[in-house]
Amino acid sequence: MAEVYSDDYDTPWKDILEHAFPEFMAFYFPSAQTQIDWDKGYEFKNTRKKGSGYFF
Image 1 (cartoon, one colour):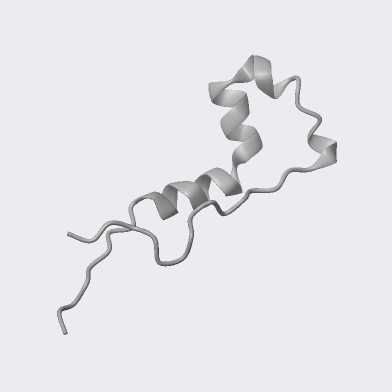
Image 2 (image 1 turned 30 degrees about the vertical axis):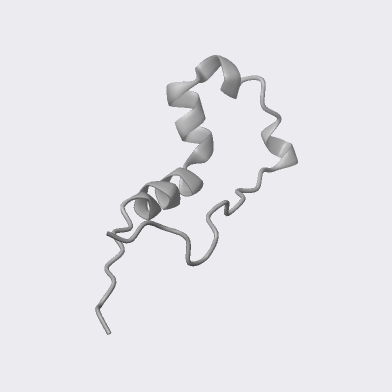
Protein backbone atom coordinates (compact mmCIF):
# COMPACT_ATOMS: atom_id res chain seq x y z
CA MET A 1 0.00 0.00 0.00
CA ALA A 2 1.30 3.48 -0.87
CA GLU A 3 2.21 5.85 1.90
CA VAL A 4 0.06 8.95 2.28
CA TYR A 5 1.80 12.13 3.39
CA SER A 6 -0.15 14.90 5.00
CA ASP A 7 1.48 18.29 5.49
CA ASP A 8 0.19 19.97 8.61
CA TYR A 9 1.32 23.56 8.43
CA ASP A 10 -1.55 25.19 10.27
CA THR A 11 -1.37 23.31 13.59
CA PRO A 12 1.62 25.26 14.97
CA TRP A 13 -0.12 28.54 14.14
CA LYS A 14 -3.34 27.39 15.79
CA ASP A 15 -1.41 26.33 18.89
CA ILE A 16 0.31 29.72 19.13
CA LEU A 17 -2.96 31.56 18.63
CA GLU A 18 -4.68 29.52 21.33
CA HIS A 19 -1.78 30.18 23.71
CA ALA A 20 -1.71 33.96 23.20
CA PHE A 21 -5.20 34.82 21.95
CA PRO A 22 -5.82 37.95 24.09
CA GLU A 23 -2.41 39.31 23.13
CA PHE A 24 -3.09 38.55 19.46
CA MET A 25 -6.38 40.41 19.63
CA ALA A 26 -4.78 43.37 21.42
CA PHE A 27 -2.07 43.66 18.79
CA TYR A 28 -4.05 43.10 15.60
CA PHE A 29 -7.53 44.25 16.65
CA PRO A 30 -7.10 46.71 19.54
CA SER A 31 -10.57 48.25 19.29
CA ALA A 32 -12.27 44.83 19.25
CA GLN A 33 -10.08 43.56 22.07
CA THR A 34 -11.28 46.32 24.41
CA GLN A 35 -14.91 45.29 23.79
CA ILE A 36 -14.38 41.65 24.76
CA ASP A 37 -15.22 40.59 28.30
CA TRP A 38 -12.22 38.33 28.90
CA ASP A 39 -13.52 37.40 32.37
CA LYS A 40 -16.20 35.27 30.68
CA GLY A 41 -13.47 33.14 29.15
CA TYR A 42 -13.30 31.75 25.67
CA GLU A 43 -13.14 28.35 24.05
CA PHE A 44 -11.64 27.25 20.75
CA LYS A 45 -13.61 24.81 18.67
CA ASN A 46 -11.88 22.14 16.63
CA THR A 47 -13.55 22.58 13.25
CA ARG A 48 -11.38 20.09 11.37
CA LYS A 49 -12.79 16.61 11.17
CA LYS A 50 -10.49 13.67 11.67
CA GLY A 51 -9.42 12.15 8.41
CA SER A 52 -10.31 15.18 6.34
CA GLY A 53 -7.68 16.63 4.10
CA TYR A 54 -6.35 16.51 0.63
CA PHE A 55 -4.25 13.70 -0.70
CA PHE A 56 -2.37 14.22 -3.92
